[in-house]
Image 1: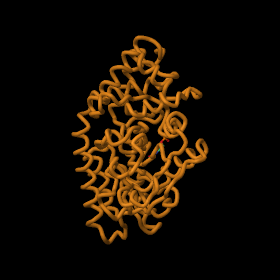
Image 2: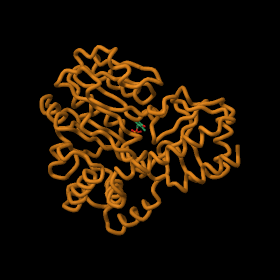
Image 3: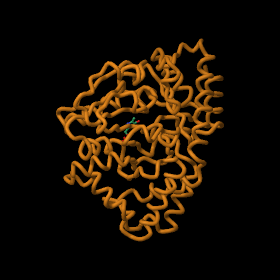
Length: 353
Ligand SMILES: *Cc1c(COP(=O)(O)O)cnc(C)c1O
């Protein structure tokens, strides 16, 4: 089965060999305070910095998921009030959990067809110490440009960004935010069970100021461990090993970025030329479409038909999410999806529709 689900999705075929290698080398049994683990973690962090062009003073932590990262932001970094701007289900969930931790936190739901810079001028940011944004709203396929200058925030405020279905697939403007979070089962193309949290020096300074050490995963505790190239709990060593191998094997993210955009264009062009299919892009403005997740909207029977044709050919497409469950279909364009995979998908659709 070839999966275009927007996560979990197709895993890089190379991963099988890496898992085998981890087993043969005994990596699957190592202790997370052993020199072998420290070497693995050090090398993985260096590879990520290098291949993804992450600023050298930003620090990377391994956690269990993007969802855990939402909670860490609230527990370790928010002083009193976070603000959540969202137009989809993931942003909404994040806002919900954050408000349980900090009751003063507020949120603004905005229109599906609007950009963050369109709406930011109409919002009162007073008292906001942490702004939480979603770069990749996987539920509806919106991709937002993240830039600090869009928000009239107090200079001490920090910005946290959920980039779960874009990190590893496109270049992200690291300097434009203080926290970036993601999970590996989307653009990183490995099995689920590992999350990444990336922090700027300003985010770490906030953690220092707040001195939160109440939770096992508070940033200060994670940072103390990271300095020793260890982790705050026994992590998913197998996934870290696989991510390390893959990062070394794959080209620089600038190259992957170009490939992602090329494949996205191919997919968009295909649908643009298929007006008789009665499907439309859920996100009208192409500059607001996430290149890594395409959402198409249409009559539920047409949506069913398309998914059915694909399934008959061993291809799985993504269901709609939340309120879009019945009338949208989502197609992932992750780096693990090759041009040949897309050829197979488009041929199947060409013949079946
Ligand atoms: C998938 C996803 C999440 C949740 O990821 P988990 O690994 O399930 O924690 C959060 N945010 C976005 C935007 C996602 O796409």
